[in-house]
Image (tube, rainbow, N blue to C red):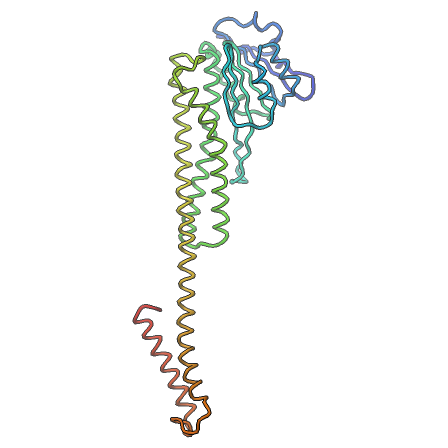
Length: 333
């Protein structure tokens, strides 16, 4: 049976009634309270929603105006609002782009959760997290007996697992950059380093508030979570902590790579200055000799000798060789 779809604008509303035996679609929202029994779950999924659609859902489910306004605002950091009979949470979805490895595109997933219902709203189509969890309920409808918070757990688990490929790829890129810096540090490597630092900072800025939301769910006193479900949310929170551990490692690697770059540039500059100093020292000595014999005096050693020029060139070459030998012996060259 096709899902119930709104005809106003481009928004698509799909309604699902999950019982112990099956997942039913096309459930009328007007009669949802009489249709949903104990140990059953009503799931309403809205894609590309409009303010009119959200207001309609607010009337049917008694959503708090603060949560509705938050849902209709532009992109906001993840946050959680608790109310007597339901709660609202705004989560971040990260698009995993393989071509542009350092580009992160965050989107929002809004959840309204009551005692027998779950509302998910997203401007994205498709919404992989919602589709994946709905497929799991379609295969095992008896999961509805665990209540709506189990659906929230599955969504959070999917989102957190989707973060791992992004941060692990960032970790791999940081390791590759560190190896490249050790071999040859150039401006391209420096630009890549600052690009990765920007991505790491952006990830921490985006996922930091989400970690705080997961910490709230991991509390044992969160009123909507059953006591036997606490361990599941604590597990999701621990996975998020692992993600931040990886990002801390990436930050240390990038800081070390920057130190490697600065050290390499400093060593390269020292090598250049050493060579220039040696060249200047040799030329200064030769310039002294040529300047000495360029003075306007009549009586100077070897001045009238027919072999004076040849002898002077040989002497200057020998002196240069002796100076270079001395520099090498002193390990200055």
